[in-house]
Image (cartoon, rainbow, N blue to C red; front, side, top):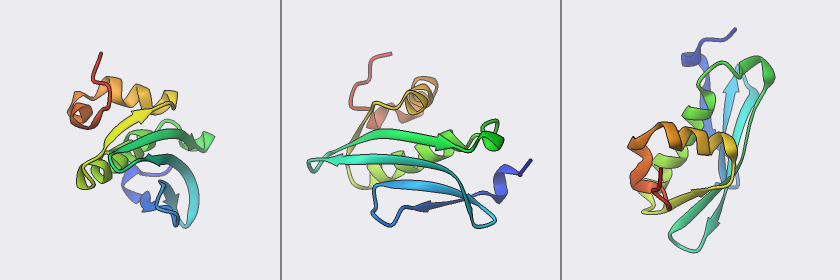
Length: 101
């Protein structure tokens, strides 16, 4: 099993998501849709089965959160995995479009 610190995260070429790579291989991905000038909607995450025990989904969501903060956007998510991350991490509430718990 890979070490979490050996995983690299990159913005996708279209600018609408991030991928997680290990030794050049894509092992995870998060995608979002830009809505207007002030919102992002996370619509999909995927982690290769062998790496699902690592905190890759959290790290991918954190990158989207950082991007949203830099771009002054709010985040809506329709992806269950990303929703779980938001539910468990109140430090992301400042960018949640809906802050209900």
